[in-house]
Image 1 (cartoon, rainbow, N blue to C red):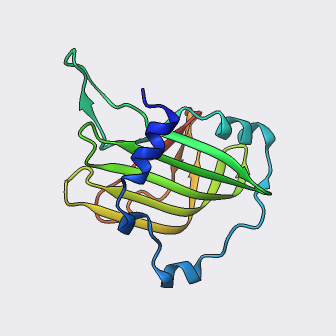
Image 2: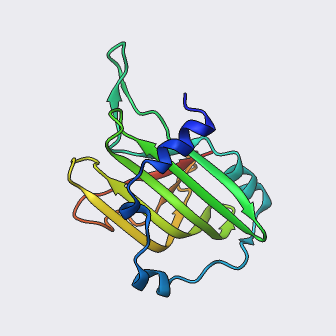
Image 3: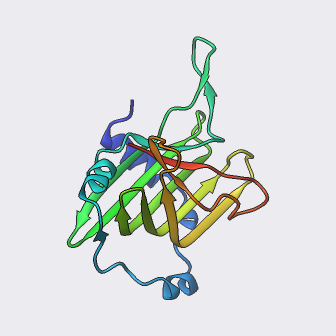
Amino acid sequence: MRTCLAWAIALAAIPATAMAQPAAEEAQSRPVAQTVVNDQSALARLRGNSGITLQWINFTYSDGSAGARRGHVSVADRGNTVHISGVQFTADGEGYVSVTGDIAEIGSDYFILDGRIVISGAPDADRQCIKTGRSRFAITQNRRYWRMREFEWCDSLTDYIDIYF
C-alpha cells in the first residue's frame, strides 16, 4: 500500500503535458468560488472515500487471482472550495486514470467536478484521453460509489470511472 508521500511522488511522475491545461481551455473554465453543499453526509462520504478505479486497470495478484487495486483520492478544503485529487495506476505503472479539480456542488447522490480527468495507457498503451471542465458523478442503484456519468467522452470505448465510499 502506498503512503501519502509515495502517492505525491507518483502524481509528480505523470507527464506535465497530461496534467497541464491548454491556455484556450483554461480561459473557458472559471474557478469554483465556493462548493455548494446540499448534503453534509455526502460531503463526509466524499472526504472518507476509499479510492478510485477505472475498469480497464486490472492486474493479476501473486496468487494468480485477478483484481484491481484502487487508487488513492485526497479531498481537501481550499477556503470555501472542496478540492479533489486522485490517481490509479496500472500494475506496471505505465497507465493511469487521474481526477483533479474543485467540487462545484455535492448532493445526496451526486457531485459535480470542475476540473481535469486523464486516462493514459488504458486499456491500450497508446490511448490518451483528457477532459477538462464539468463532469457529473452520481450514485445509482444503491451502489457504494459515485460513477462518472459521461461514459464515451474520449472515443468509442465506454469508460467507468468510480470513486468509492
